[in-house]
Image (cartoon, rainbow, N blue to C red):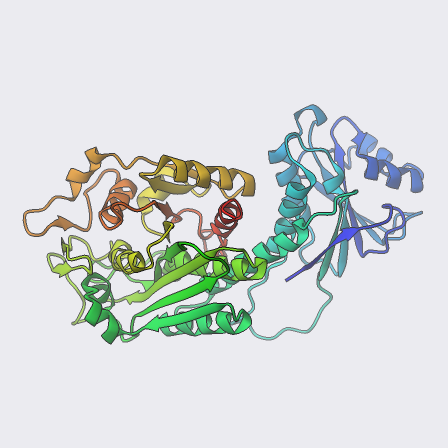
Length: 488
């Protein structure tokens, strides 16, 4: 975790390892860049005149030992055309700037990008987004890597905040901690991060934050409750299922309940997945990871709310005891579900967890899941899929996504799609056929949340960056924290 501080002093005098300033195209300097240029007898203007620094948005140039400055390094970041500068260009420039710091032997960084005016955004927004970008770029997964020689690494980032006196940096620190926890849990290999490990991590979270109470339900308790769908998914694994409940009582009133899909590894079961890319199925617990990250952030922020996080943690494996296509399982809610595909397992563990959540009489109920490849086809890796029958809740979550830049896009839950779940052998099936797979998965979950203020977030495209070097993103922790901040 990085430490964030407000910056005092002018760019030429700051005793940081590196100073970040922005420049626009057409050889236009920001005020901080102009001050550095004046102190260094025109270095930046000469570099822009020669074309070595273009000012194109997101481009970076690292300068060493610039005369007249206290800092030994200057990172010059392109902001694009001044007349077109907006929040999107600010975010791009900020993110690229912090990416450029990776591998540099710097301990402290002073950023003056937050001095740049961003239309329709205030200083608090700029500080939060800049701090989160810095921490996101600084994150390193090391849990299962061989120890390496110690080296100088970034530990502190200072941001120019002018006269701002708010708590934006404290808020950013809490959110960054939540995102980092969600990323770390998602990145761990499945032989470490199994259902029992998630249960242990909940207990550790409660030790860090005594205001959080934890309950872990074991297989026998779930059998007593009638969680036939969840238990069917877990039947083929030697790793016992866990239902983890984290209860933060920061306020009175009905709780805000979040349910995160925790398939710690998904082979697809009997309907086994293709080998290519199956290693990414360790990320199938990123819904649960985001609930852990959210609870971490909520506890750090000490929100005056009652917040409950529930994570059904299960491994989906093929075995002689595994559930099969054409099996019929009975859910905790009493519905009989025909299994048409064992790789549509996430909704089966979620439906029982959602039914269990109803005992808390939620103010709002939100589930988060890497649920369908169909959502990735529909929205790509940019937006989280959002489904809800409650227009106000959907609008609130969409707005929170815009503010936090952890965006979602709403998909319909019209009754027209419900018929796709029909079957002649049970109350309904666990899949709805070839078309609209993300929506019919939402329709399935909707049958277990009747009468609730409920939303479903499909993060299959946003929970991790695909590829051999891809890592968990920690989404949608940022969106959900922003939404909770609006509920106080």
